[in-house]
Image (cartoon, rainbow, N blue to C red; front, side):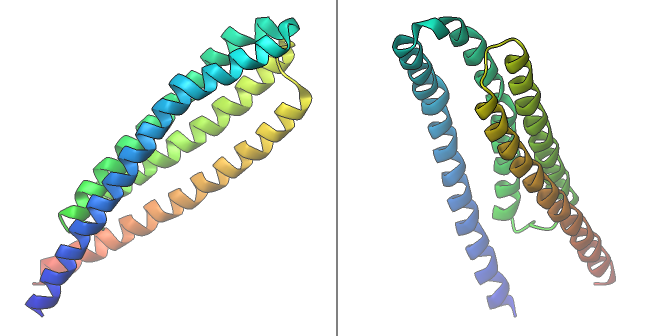
Length: 168
C-alpha cells in the first residue's frame, strides 16, 4: 500500500512538471502572439487597406485587454499544478482556483463580445467578425460552465477526503 502511494506521489510530481511546462509554453506563446503577431497582423491589414488605418489603435488596445484574463488563468493553472505536485489534487484551494478560472473565462467571453459590439457600433468592426466572435464567446462560456462543474466536483471530493482523514 505504501509503495502504491509513493508511486502515485511520483506520478503526480511528473504531471505537475508537465502541466507547468505547458503553462510556460502557453505564456511564451501568448507573449509572441500579443507582442508580435497581433500588432504585425494589424499593421499589415492597415498597410493593405489604408482606409482602415483608424482601426489599428482601438483594436490593438482591445486585443491587449483580452490578455489580462488569459494570464490570470495561467496563474491559477500554475497554482493548481503546484498542488498536484504536492499530491493535494482535491482541495478547497484547487476548487477556488478553478472557480477563478471560470470567472476569468466568463469575463473574457463578456469582454470579447462587448468589445466587438462596441467596435462595430463605432464603425471599427465588420458584421462577419462580430458573428464569428459571438460563436467564439459562446464556446468560451461553455468552457466556463465545464470548469465550474469541475470546481464543484473538486470541492465535493475535497470534503470527502477531509471527512475520511478525520476518521483515520
